[in-house]
Image (cartoon, rainbow, N blue to C red):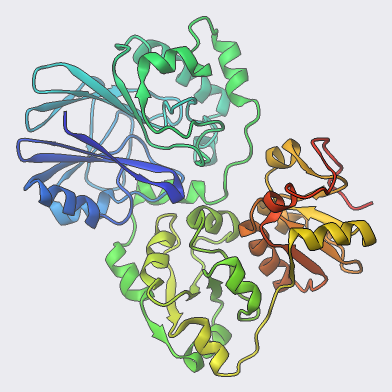
Length: 471
């Protein structure tokens, strides 16, 4: 059967391409749709359907642009109420894609409209299931997202629905079916997804905790809800965009790809409420950047950290990028609904520096220098990794303030004492550094390579959970 996974690692997202006899379907596309159109053109196929497994929270889907550009019909599962023309399918409804058949299996739980699509080949053999966020490899979708859009849909109610969907709709299917989920490890839509992005249903019945045959509903609900952290703040906003519709990516690119000279950039930054977002890597940023800008580098989980750290999804943004990376930055911002890029600095930071404009820097030290400071000064160490990472191993005496909680814990950063920042590798600590600088902190140092490099030294570390306040 001709089904391909199109995986985008920076947001841990999987779309799927299905083609038979000149007809194609795309499942859960990303915002930029040209790659799917190119893939179909390679097969000389017409995209007939855009299947959506649910209204996504962690990204803005490309269903509207793809439908508009190809004439494909958008398909949702039962109970969906999109704000645009789409087919709202019935449970067990069949769709033909060339000689293949796609069967709708309504599997509420992650959301109420969540749907699994069963793929059946030209001989009538069931091949696989595209599960969306209903079933992941090693995990299932978190049931607490829909309540941020519809208050009555509590996480307990949705978890109960998910239990029934898995037991009554998914687990009775054949063990040899291939499971094609919407996400892999790194997505915030589950809590312990595997790094693998496909598996057989039979293997998942053996190794996925949520599919244990003897697990009762109450145990399932408790297990599923235990350990859930708060979802990123942009999730409900992405859901609404996916339900109601949005601007075309072409429009967003046209607005954002506006080169601004140093003088023009300075004027726009001064006269508007635009946020200056520097997407260069930590090493280059530390050497110099525009004052009051924040850093979220393209060479990491860019879109997810934008969503975590920039609270207003409608925020106007001015970009500072490496030359030639402007369009990539705009597209990756749009994947999570940040559609208001209004221009970029022509010539990048080098142009700013050449114009003798004011710059800001970040002090950094190596892990070896950190060892010496620990021995001689015993400085305050603030670790901005996730709590689970910190609990696993950290510098003795370090304080844990996860990056996504910095804005609500600024009072815990000392202004009258020097401190040292670290994360795992330097990506997140540089985001933290730029945010702290913006808020008037200048008494800190960042560790190059983060805890990964620190752990190679003889600095004492522990997995004991230390207090997270400065007493």
